[in-house]
Length: 93
Image 1: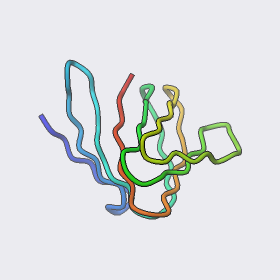
Image 2: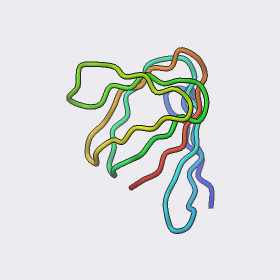
Image 3: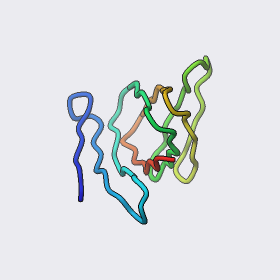
Image 4: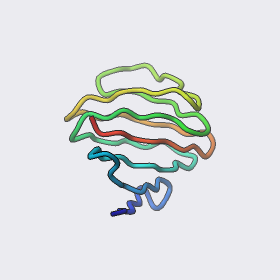
């Protein structure tokens, strides 16, 4: 079953689904800066474009171009900046 989510006035869109018993979302992020909180641990893979990420408790931003991934702890959060439209795959760990 697919579940569509829209955040930040439509600037972030995702479709949630399950594959092999694992929950995932695939989505797109438009230009802007956004904050996300996490309930479960996540692995985010940038599939198109580039995202700048600042994990909770950190002061520095890190660049993640297409083909790279980062992990976010459960009950945490992260800031994301997109300077151009980008896409991602999120795996809930």
